[in-house]
Structures are given as C-alpha cells and as structure tokens.
Length: 496
Image 1 (cartoon, rainbow, N blue to C red):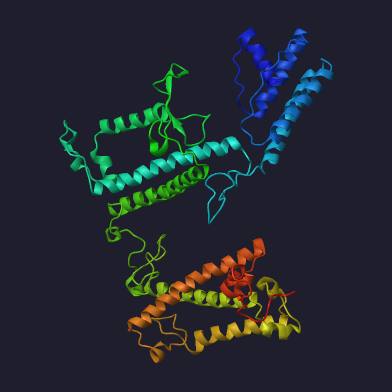
Image 2 (cartoon, rainbow, N blue to C red):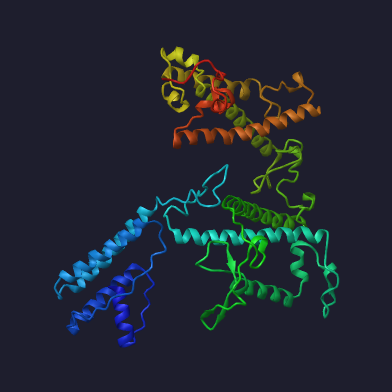
C-alpha cells in the first residue's frame, strides 16, 4: 500500500515522499493515503507497485513469507468497505511489519558456517552474534569490509618493514628540501610529510575506492573492477572494463581449479586478519617506544616498571615486573603494600588447592566424601558440595579457623614477609638465594593463574554443565579419541 501511494502521489501531485524510515512512517503514510483516496471516492485509483527485489535475506523462506504477507493485505483491502480502508491499511502495515519480524526470526537459522573464512581451530567465530539474524546482505557487506581492511593492513605491515631496508632516492618535496631518506619510519612520518603529500595520498585512496578498484555489488566480495561514472551514470567502455585477476594483475589469468582458488582466498582472509591485529600492535609499540619493534625499556611509563622498593624482586610475571595499571599502589605505605601482597598470595594458595580439589572430584577420586555419605557422591564438584553433610561442612570451617588463629596470634609471620605463614623460611631455605626467589615468583604466578582458573571452572560448570570430567583420563580424555583403549589415570570412573 505504501509503495502504491508512492507511485500515485509523486507523479500526479508532485509530493516528495521518502519511503525509507521506520515502520511508524510507513503506517502513517498508509493511513493518510487511505483517507485521501476515500475523500476522492476513487476506489480504483491504486496503481500496481513494481516488483521489489528481495536480496537482503537469504533463503526462499523469507521471500515466501513476505509474499504471503503482501497477499494477505491485498485480499483484506479488496474485501473491505471503503469506509474502513484506513483501518485496513493500518492493519496491513502492522501485519507486514509483524511478519517481517517473524522473517528475521525464521532466517536467524540461515547459517553461514560453510562460508569462506570458517577455519580451524575456532571454526565459525561470531561471539558478538552479528550474523544471528541471518541477514545475507549484512553478512556480505561485512565480508567486503573485512577483506578490504585485511588487504590494507597487509600493505601497511609491509610499509612498516620495507623502509627499514630500502628508501627511494631523491626528494619527496623539492620545495621543502625533504628527501625520502629523511622520512622516519612509522608514526613519526606523520609529522614530516607535508600536508600536500597527505592530500595526494587521500586523493589516491579516493580514486581507487570509487573508480580504479571498485567493489561492484553484483560481484563476489573482494573481486574488484574498474568503474567510470559520468554524472550519476556508470559508463562501460573497453578502456575501463577490467578486473583484478591473480596477484592483482588487471585482467590477469583466473584460477580455474575451485579447490586451489578456495584455499588461496581462505589464506588471504587469514593473513588479512593477522595483519589487522599486527598493524595495531605495531601502532601501539611505535607510539609507546618510538619504533614498531622498539625496545620496551624506552617506555618509561609502562605499568610493568619496577614498583615500590619494598616489593622489588617479588613482581610477576617477571622478577622486575610490577603490574599496577590503575595505580592502586600510589601513595600507599610499605606496610599496606606488604599486606596486599600477603593477601594476594593467600588467595592464590587457596585457589591452587581449590583447583586440585576440583580435578580430584571431577576425576571420580573422592573416597573420603563417599565414606562420609555412605554412598558414591557426584563427580560434579558443585553437586558434590551440596551432598556434603552439615557436620562435614562445620569441620571444614573449624579447620580453616584454626589455621587463621595460628598464623594470626600464635605464630605471627615476620613484618617484612607477612606471606611467610609461620616464619619458617630461614629454616628451610636461604631467603637471599636466587633459586628461592625464583620459587617464590613461580608461586605468585601460579596463584594468580589459579584464581582465574578456578573462577573459570565454576563459571563453565554453571553455564554449560561441563566440569572437566575428562581430567581423570589420559591426555584429559583427548587421546582416547585417537588411540582407543588407553586406560584412565584414575581408577574410579564417573558416576552412573
């Protein structure tokens, strides 16, 4: 109905109509047009709208339902009295909108898992759900953008590397006396190249984008061709009808083997994705150190710089590192910093024990719990925890209280090393020995990893039900898929 209004009102009354917009605009237009026709008494003044091409949706289901929606509206309009034409129009517009919403839901299952770029090990990777609506038009647009950005990034990476070994002879700007050899590599060149040079560069990119390397909507993503535009009309002549073939050669030979062609296109996508990440890394390192592969020692503001004197050598992940990106340690006393380090180590130690306990239970090795319950308890640690008796829970709480009481009141750790629970370090090792310092550093790093790891185990079990049941088998249960019959590491198996 809206299309009919568009084709009727524009030529006869010169009313400019903009059909693109929200569903509310279409609804209002349909209702207004219906009232207009009723006032004229012209029941048969509707003209047939041209057939619309439905290329935004993938699969025949969407087109079928769209046609069904339009047919239902057409039949409703034909059978309704003229007085209720406005209501019918509103109902039709609402029905079309509702059916198109159902189309989006129906096409959400239109899969792109077999498209180019689906590669191991992640397969079809769309964590943000951009393709969940099944919109083929949007998928194609994003694929065109991805290929273009990948190609530009590959050229950018090469542009970072080549000037390290070769620069053109002669002058970049004769008037300014700037030679190519005077242009620094990387981001520093932004300040040296004259503005006219950057204008030429932007103009070249503009010309390539619109004319010399144009992405035609009728061609597959990444297949570029020439284009000549006169006014608003594309002109095809023998001089501008060329395509970029193999290795970017205009009208070059095409790869006829479908498997080799698919492999090369997939390689281009993968290399482009890697280049996009690489060039961002080069930008960051260049901006922070002065070179794309500069020495990080030049980054004096790095959060990995050595921290307060009291924590020197205890860092992590390396001995001289100090990770404090939000500046929590600024302005804090040595006593406060030592206490925080002691708390961090305590949480890390508890998390390491928690991970070991989780793996033991998941592997089916929980004889104490079985004995206490008088039956075999669950291998799922979260379910297992609910099967713990109240008496056992209080025993666990009492044991923890005893440890805290001993380390807080009975045998306090030294002030200079509050993480040394009972102060026995001088009895078992030389605190100044490098091997002991390395062991302390490993404990800190492993504790941090365990804190993150245990949270991941709990979150994974809660969201997916996977509690790493294969941990009790050889290679975590992965080897059995390749070499059947490998005996498990742990004798007890999962619950029946």
